[in-house]
Image 1 (cartoon, rainbow, N blue to C red):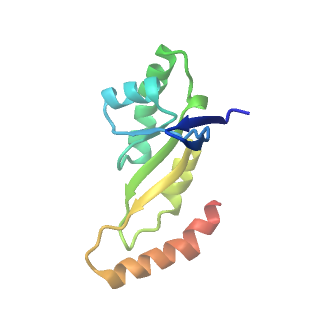
Image 2: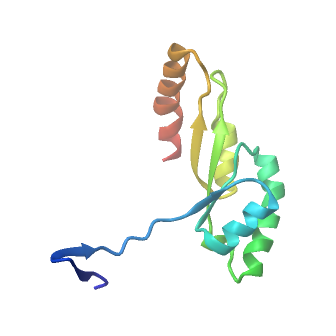
Length: 130
């Protein structure tokens, strides 16, 4: 069943077969080559839906060069979001492009604004995309 017992200086340990997905971040062609060769996912940084749309053919070409396809590669995204923004229209576009996970950056030094934005996203936006 994939579990191997090892005896190390009189101590028995059990190594469990764990497989964690590897995501490569970055927007340039070298990052896309690393995604195609080594990763299970791509994590572009701050790309708009239009820029992501323009970049996906390059990812697909790099994947094809090593015998892989988009089906082999998950998409996640880091997105800097403004406190007053309604992200729903862009989230719909990202979802249509195959983005499965978004990491929001709520970069503000104002803790109250951070809390209000986080609460709004958690109660109004996230439930609509589950």
